[in-house]
Image 1 (cartoon, helix red, strand yellow):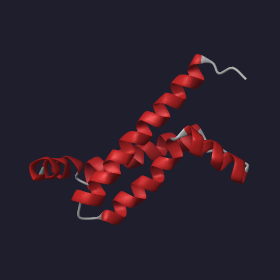
Image 2 (tube, rainbow, N blue to C red):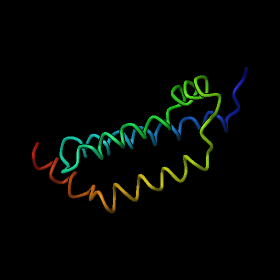
Image 3 (cartoon, rainbow, N blue to C red):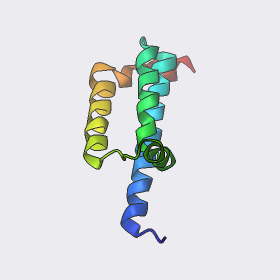
Image 4 (cartoon, rainbow, N blue to C red):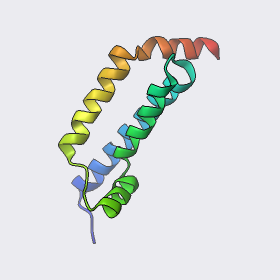
Amino acid sequence: MKMNDQSVGWKFFNAFFGVIVIGIGLVNVFWGNDPGFGVFLLVLSCAYFPPLQALFKDKTGRSIPGLVKFLLGIFILWAALGVGELFPKVNLMLNGL
């Protein structure tokens, strides 16, 4: 089975966003005041990695629709940047090193 360029690009974007969410989650776990939120973000990041998406589809018979991942991404960014105060936590992290 040959993948087209759009499929490869979409998988790369998903994985890249997943890595960003992992980074945000780790900042919240180790430098935030809410490690539970960081763990929650780490779990949500699994929705963006193609191998984990395939595993989810194999186990449940359903895939996660693109619209759901898009809305989840907006929620993650809103929660991390607005409510989660990501930039002050990153500043705290950098000053602590």
